[in-house]
Image (cartoon, rainbow, N blue to C red; front, top):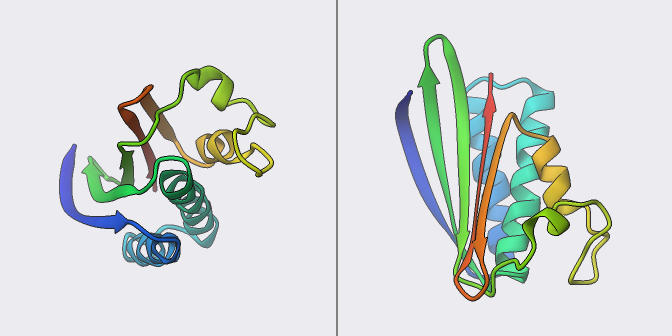
Length: 134
């Protein structure tokens, strides 16, 4: 797998969530994802950026355009140094929330992409990596 390009976006304020959405849309158009796949990527990115800001206290999003043989992909990694998630399996279940939302964001993001990985340690933060292939 070859990383052809990357970009790092700071997530420090609520407006950065919109910025992440716009940049992910731009990259997915550039990589010629279908409208449906663009929407899935932007929706997943929005949920994860919101989690990074609201639950992690801010962090970063790293985008990477990928090539593997004839297929192109977009990988997004969200990192924060917030309180972490004590029970990742529980956090991925629909309806579970520690905030005021519906508890669909993390699990929903997982369903929208081809690859999903999460690591979290209480007191040390959370890292979520998603990849969508074209």
